[in-house]
Length: 360
Image 1 (cartoon, helix red, strand yellow):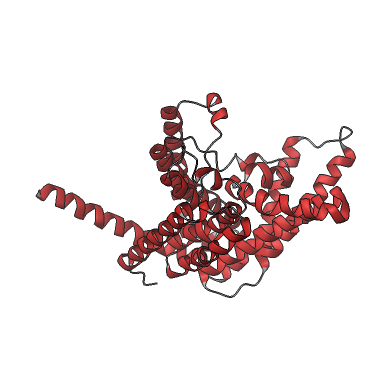
Image 2: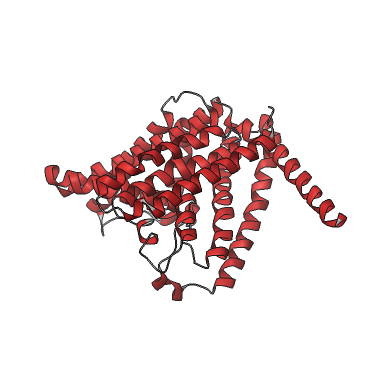
């Protein structure tokens, strides 16, 4: 694989500048409009821009975060903004307490500013930043160990390889989100809501998807998909079936957005396995919720047992539907081949910077 990092970094900065300019347009112009449909019309070019910008990037480690931040989260946040909903609407004029920097940061990055009323319950800012950097360092070491384990993949049992894929996905997403969140927290001076909540402690699918795994996605899917679908369908099919329909729709949209991300990684046509993975989990989550209602207070599995069953179900279905599409398209190999390229690129730039400083 030949990856020209100089050209890729130039493209990355062009994407960043273009997306920031687009959010300035939203902040200074669109925010002054009041009618939701009018705002939605003026946001259409930004929806298109946020969808195509990541396609100019070819590196897995730059394309992936930008697809997630712009095509998925960015477009969904702008959709809420059009209908005067947080998080962006509360950061736009005439709010005197928030600046353009807040608006752009929340619009482009996978972060959510914490409710100030909850701040008293949390550690001090310095302590919070220290803990986040310490946690980030530990996860970076574990992530490095996982990458090193790929060298022995030909000699490992398929189940062990599956564990490596899961750990790679978990630590990779956590590091990407954390590397974004911690510097932003330092610059803005605001606490940020956690992006994961110890997903390995999940005791059910509902617990895993709703309260522990990638809370950034959960937080954006709930107001954009779950709540509107439940509110609309409850008029025709009643609250119970409307809730089930909303859960299914939320997982379906998540699956479709994962297909978009996988296409941007690999540029290969979708096979819809990821969509079926999330559809299956949506159905099973809803069945689980209904079973809990039926047996509430009469029978409950020990948390250790339910936790192991949850992890087993995630692993089996992930191996069946989630990972094959990525592995077939060589996304894992592309990511692994990029690590030394990016490390050498950063190392060369640091050496150049040090040489320049020493010269002066």
